[in-house]
Length: 260
Image (cartoon, rainbow, N blue to C red; front, side):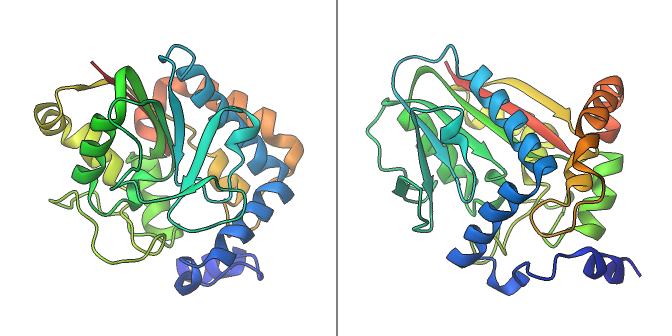
């Protein structure tokens, strides 16, 4: 029944799951963000969270990892966008597991929904530790695990959500088709002590759950928008009102690390 509902809500022009690793799927996502005012406003809100958190970083490169079809450069004009695919509008093509920047040259890494696709997070964390300047930051917005979000991620999302996984690594070779949506929560909430012991130089400044409803209401990148675009401000204020319940309701979380 749930799978039937998901298929009913899916936009007819959306790429099939098996095609998500191709360039045309990323270009489709870019067009969807532009066409959905509700979704674009949510991206803008997230981009401004990034902008606020990198105000105090030292001078150096600011790099977005997994830029895909986004438009962060409109908000942080000096950011270097990157992806593992050669997508038009992206500045550099490389993997987050092998970053082509010198030691201690980067002031900030920015990731929106990227960590849960990285196959070998230990390689990623080693690379950002190497590249970051002292007091440089990593700012991420990723899916999280809550009583509310777990249901939707498990039954209404095409990507795997396995909060019980006993490993950080992700199997498979696909860019978007292989993932674990629960991975950021596993690393920074469930396995927080393990992370701190492995990477003492990467101080966890913030793990903040938020945005219970608006991603789902927007339809995301493949599903029809469920509410009028004019309702964005109403739902934004509702989520602010429900902030005390974020641990139980939040669908995303902001994670901020600092090299110290």
